[in-house]
Length: 385
Image 1: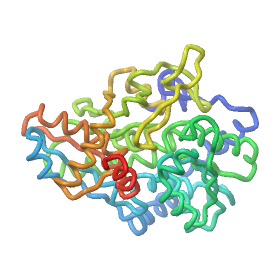
Image 2: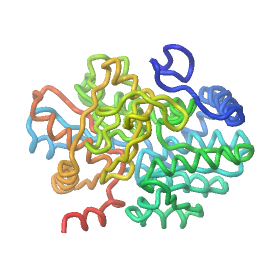
Image 3: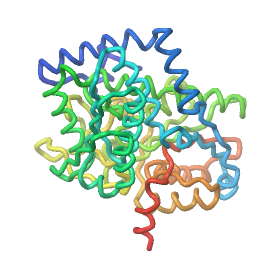
């Protein structure tokens, strides 16, 4: 289902709407990505870092206590929170940094919302000795001050973006502005499955390791495919990685979970954002609407083009949960399983708590725990007190 018209499109969604000079850079990036993604030496090096540095494979854990509490379907947790740096983001940044190295880049830039992609990017830049600048909304730097310090500790320069709402959208705006100005020597290591082609396809390719592993693990444990796979959706990187290997398995339900006040797919309509076409929360003039989520990583008015396409053709389901449900899920998983999930991941957990009791004991659900909640503990403490 990657391209229905030409490479870079998912139905009507995707494409690349950027200035001519930047398009030349993206054309080179596309050429290099498609060259190296199937290159034996490239993948050997990537797999080395996945196993020796990240700690893959991440476990598929049977949440026995949570299953007993909910009743109904078995609940399995794909433990991306156990990766080095604490989230799924490291999968993509390792793939892209190895590509950047082969392309001779010396400077790397990135955007970040909750800070997990920024931390992962700063981590690999430290390892490979590259100059690193991270753009982060000013509001998010306050909400995620600990991750800002982590990035700086790893040697990155963190730029707080004061414009607009001071959140993820504005961070992406500034990162693209930097790339337009410095494209001749800068590699933009984009963190979500958004942006102009080839970024969505690149991010999906490197994050697909999640679903490749979970399918193999679930088949070994249950002897069959899962009934449903659930993941939170902001821009959509952990979700597309969780869904990728199941897209052709029509019997597996793919369920993306959005914040109810940043429900791009559920409440948006087709439009253009950050150089690509997707479903966007927008006003009558086509301007992106303000969004809000207690999970900074989901605070984005658009969504990846493939998610837009999967929604349009009915292959994937997209639902919303409230901040109250997210906080309840955050606490429930912590108390019942001893696993503190990221607020982003807690969106997926919240819907699993709804869904599991409606299914039979013969069914099973995979919930992607995209990140750990250490970064959110202080924020939740302040919200609950």
